Every structure is written in C-alpha cells, then in structure tokens.
Amino acid sequence: MLSEANVRNMLSAISRGNHVLNERAKLFKIAKTNCPDCGFDPIRKESTNPDCDTCEGKGMVEVLSYNEIPVSIETEKDTQYRFTNAGKITEGEILLTIDSKEISEVLNLDKSHDLSTHQGIKKFVEQYDHITWHNAKYKMASFEASYLQGIFYEISMKMKLEEW
Image (cartoon, rainbow, N blue to C red; front, side, top):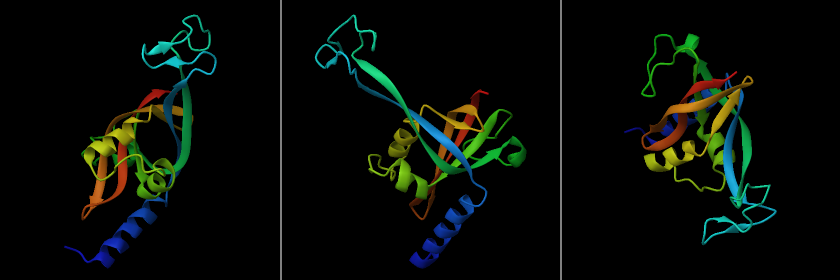
C-alpha cells in the first residue's frame, strides 16, 4: 500500500497528464420538464391539454443541454496495439477520458451522483445522450472507471461515431 502523500502525488501527475493533450468536447443530456403551455398531470402521466401543440399532448417537453469541458481523446491511430477493458478502438470510434477535476467541478458539481460505486458511475455516464467532438456526434458504447487505491480519478468512455 502506498503512502497518502505518494497517492496524492500520483493522482496529481495523472490529472496533469490528462490535461496535456486535451481537446474540448460537448456532453449533451436530455432533460424532461413540464410543458410551459399546458402542464403535466402527475396522476394520469399526461398533459392537462391533450391538444397542446407545444408538447403534443404529453405534458412534458425535452430540453437538450450540454457542458463543454476539456477531455483527452484517443483515436484508432493512437491506440492501434492497445486494448483496454472498454475494448479495442476501431475506425469510427474514439476513447474519451474525463478527469475527476472536470467531473467534480463541472459535471457533478451538485454531487447528485455517487461516484464511489459502479452503479453510481454507470448512472452518471448514462445521463448523457451523446457527445460532440470536431463537429461529429458520438454515442457511448462502453465505459471504464479508474481508481488508485480506491480513489476515483477518471472515466474513460469508448464512443461510436453516429453522425458526421
């Protein structure tokens, strides 16, 4: 077991490494909100006005929001001979790594996701509908959380190209 000081130093070095060759990506999620024109009936789970044009009688509208953050990106050319638990990267795929700094300071600022468990991390990554990088749209195929002596420090996600 490493000393606390060594663990802190290693985590700091990993974070600095994650930020050396970083790119910027947008992480998009879809939130459902009550329709501003008719409202949502929580008992019937539908609109209070079935003829509402805004929500098409659903009572809810979907709102797309995003956060743009620095991330590390690896492409097929970067990882030709390396396999990760998330799998080999092939053409049309990227490996996107998000450092815990961006997660704690931007993406999970309200601490709504417990990142100490696999289920919490799974819920965290699955909240995102897609990401964009270099004007291309990617969907998550798999993910892998990384820990050092039980301390979470990054998430790597294998992303598949959806739209160029």
